[in-house]
Amino acid sequence: MLKLPQSAYTSLRRHGEETYPHECCGVLLGQIGDGIRTVSSVVRAGNTRTDSAHNRYNIDPKELIRIQREGRERGEDIVGFYHSHPDHPALWSQTDFLEAHWFSCSYVITSVEKGKAVLTNSFELTGTDENDKKLEKERIEMI
Ligand SMILES: [Zn+2]
Image (tube, rainbow, N blue to C red; front, side):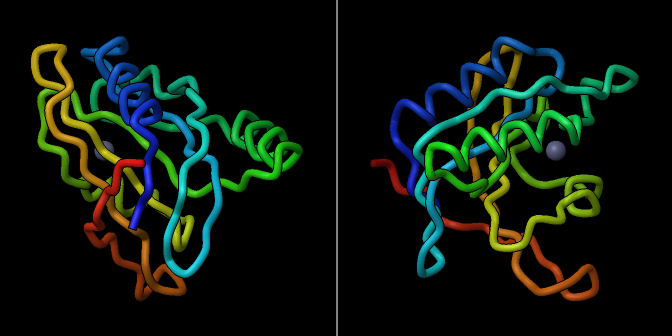
């Protein structure tokens, strides 16, 4: 389960509207305990995929390391990632699945239709390695 403050929910959906028709992406920081990820902050990231930014996203590894370090200084861990699907459903794609490597993290996807954020879904990356991993839909609880 993903516990998301209303402000974080609004922020990540607005990010998708701002970058439309391109995908946005970012990182969710907070705490993980007993399978519950509680978000305390949302960090926007630049989409490095300029070749196909409408249906691909990628966070620069250097930027990710910086976000992780700055989070740790505030006592926050990476609990998930988010991105948008411009004019596509809020479901993970094969590429999303192949590029998901953070086990026990949440992958949040927002569909943005004609510039308006519509649906936001979250999927937990379960399993232990690349052979048994799964993206399973999880509940988002607003806090
Ligand atoms: Zn995607």
